[in-house]
Image (tube, rainbow, N blue to C red):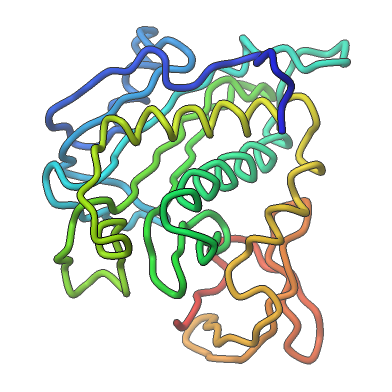
Length: 262
């Protein structure tokens, strides 16, 4: 894990919002208006237009789940042992690994060892979706300037829309009602540890552990590309964040290239 002295702290200040269109949308607007403080966490009880990957909608019952976005100014983060301060889009995958591991760390302590990361960064328990991550970045020229880390985790909700594929909540797993503000504090600490680990050590130091927690690693599953279904063995994820699949030949896929049929 990261050294004792963190370069950055995530979760401070914490801004509570009773209802918002989307915490990511709100966070982006704060950055655009130059009102965002790096490290801030924007948490809400309800999103009217929650954002998921590939334009999907994140559906959540009011007050039942953990919904928040963190903002990080890369311009304020000096890379250790490097003379060049500039962060580029090429560094973004390392942050994705760090955030996925942090959310997995957080959830594993509550729900147990059957927690995994479904590529690229969905949170799974057994074969059911417990949460998701949406990281959006701002780039100016060749400089990666801000990252917006949106996280949604099912906590106390027990009934879900039929449009959601196999969801599960922490309450369903544990039988307990959870204090969401307290969980946000715990999540912020996990994120701070992992993001600092990435800053100090780089993406390569996180990739092995990410692959150890990868959903269905080593298993043969059904995928779909443009309506054509095929079976492939999940081999892992490479340093570029591509999924490696063996289906007679070994190929790599970017996010959005294929869909899981599970």
